[in-house]
Length: 220
Image 1 (cartoon, helix red, strand yellow):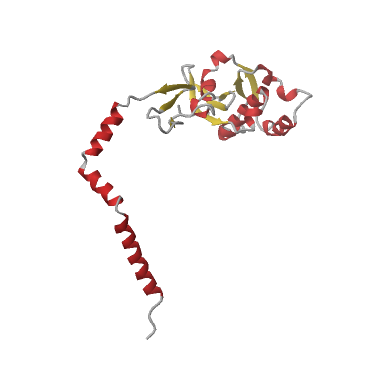
Image 2: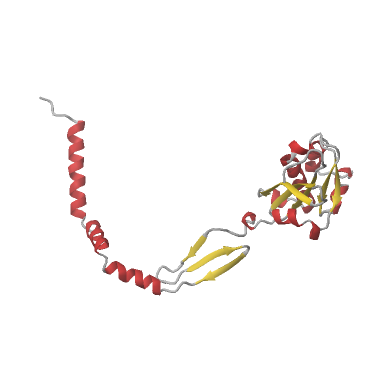
């Protein structure tokens, strides 16, 4: 949905153990909630060690940075989070050093924090739980595990979400490939060429002689 400057914006945000996600929202003319923009980001290793409270604040800060062009100077807008304590987080007399640093940043914006139960905060929750951000998974990669080089059966580990599935391929295909190489004329020629060290070494010696003669011309 294209943004409509005549309508107020609101933000939803959430943090998981390894990522943060947020979305900029507006209501259309029929009162339906629409997405204007959404963002997500994997946490840095140090950020993954933050307490839950600080991770949620990190998600809110990330959202305000990403949607700054829409929100800065805007009339009061709402920020929805499923972490209820964020409603009074910045008013606490016991602020951590990190929260104190962020306090001046939040002061630039005119917003009110509202609690939104996790079951209703599905968009931000999904953005913060993208499987490809989870350091425990490796999506789109195949890891070959063959500890025993004499064992023809290797385990192919394919990541799917956060669940790993082990597959042992049938070796009939491997046997067929080996048999095909045995009768492949082109492969036989290549193998014969590579197994002929004399031809290779002779050409190398000839090349070295040519280079030596060019580097040291004979004095008349």
